[in-house]
Image 1 (tube, helix red, strand yellow):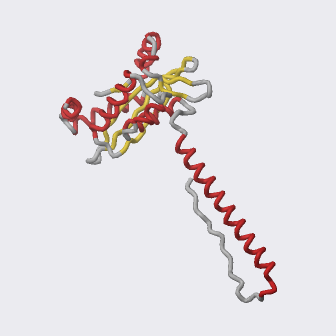
Image 2: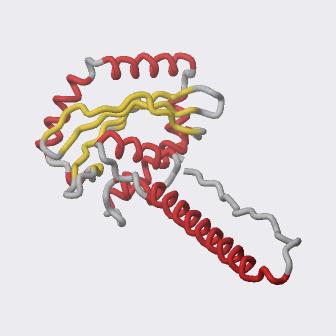
Image 3: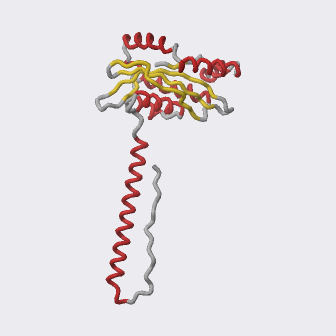
Amino acid sequence: MVEKKAVSSKKRKPTGKKNGNRKSGNKKSGNSFQGQTIKYIAGAAVIVVLAVILIFSVKGCGIAGKTPEKVVKNLIKSYVEGKEKNSRKCYGVKKANEELQTEIEASIQYFAAHKPKKVEIVSCDTIYKDGKNAYVYITYNLLLEDGQSYPCISTYMTKQNKKGKYYVLMPSKITDDMKKTAASKYAEFMNTDPYKNYVTAYETFTKKNPGYEEKLATKLSS
């Protein structure tokens, strides 16, 4: 059993009917119409630009979460999608140290070995909080190529920064006291329904797929 702890916008073109039956004495009216048309076009262009900016700003943010659960979900999705840069953002760093880089690469490699089509989050919540620190569990399914779901569970220690956003703590930032408390709280968590449901799902999968873990281990070691 593997447990890992640690807008859309539509362009609206301005339309207008040509006034071909007007006489030449109506030039002023024509110029006014053209001016209004130009204003409409310019206004529409501004709206489109603003919409594009909004789209990218929404996509760009959201790696660090307003809640500890959000950033943990983002981290798992980044791992499964093989997005190393986004994974680092979840940890609140642009450049990872050697230990964190090893952690990220190993996690991406592990999920890639399953060849999942996508990830489905089952449940995610905080096990306990201590000041700005929050210990979070997440259970999720890797949707495999053959249509089956491989159950997973992970836990992460998160921390709230001065701006109120949460990041996953790097392994080197987790103290021995944090580890002891987390171990105690995790033991209590094992008596909850989310954990029991994970165990049941995992056992069901392994019975249907004997030797899956061994094959996975071979992939990872080669």
